[in-house]
Length: 396
Image 1: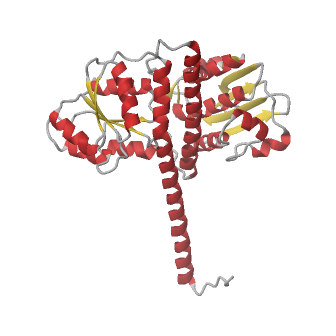
Image 2: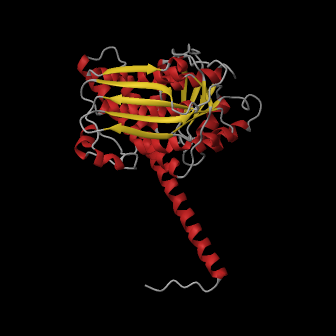
Image 3: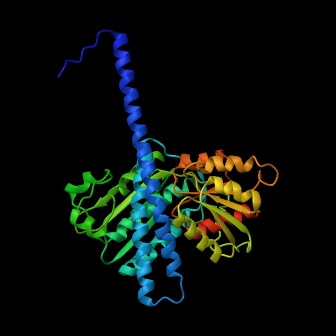
């Protein structure tokens, strides 16, 4: 190969700048690819998850058919987890970690996490336990509750996944440094051999291929946990040995604050029956599943297959709220929102909620900056969708 010769300092600066621009372009291309693939996978998953949920709710189903519908839901949500892991890791790799610190209850955070995994533990006959330091039980801490839950949930899901019998215990206490709070997830599973420990928390690493083929997984979960804990200025690790079970732990600085936490309501709000909602989406399956969910919830629904049709429809019919897809051919959701706002009185304050497979943090911010009033990610969770709709209807 030709020798790399630097003629002078100016030549060196040009070469370094060229290499930097090339690296930045490659990084941007990678991010665009991951975002596009995430969108393309989430859109059809929205239909799979939505219709499976609607099917499982049909009272006329036999036990066998209901079990089959439940299996479809389980498998599609497992696939969604893999897609989300890839998107999360890409964002973390780019340094795009948005932390949103707010007051939260560590006890309620842990109990909410346990409620998510309790069915999986029950199905395997695993005893799921919870232990919290009394000094923390009634306290309010300042931190990013969603990111903490993401880490704790991942560790707990792994513990249940790799435990065939016995128990999984979640413990919350102060670390050796009183500024830190320590979360521990201890299982009675197979443990991890010392030789395999360096592979933990590395991307795409799976320490036992036979086990991971059996249990599934992207090999990104622990790597994401480490990146998140690092972003929160904490530490993460494991205490384990082959055949003795494992304790995965993480510690993060979470200062106590003197205020009460406003807990989210557990039940769905009563729906504003008869409210008229326009669903805008270029995919027929997504329009159908949204219409089915909303109609069964008591809303009146009309659909549009692109931004132009949405604009024409709102000119001739009155709506209380619009659910707007973002990525559509021709007039996309952003442009459609702008044109609707430009129609003047009656449209400036019309609630428009993005309902899109673009779920990255910067995409959510872009939706709000471009005139939308909220964001719901695909695949659509019915309870989250209903809460979003009702919150916007009641503040309109």
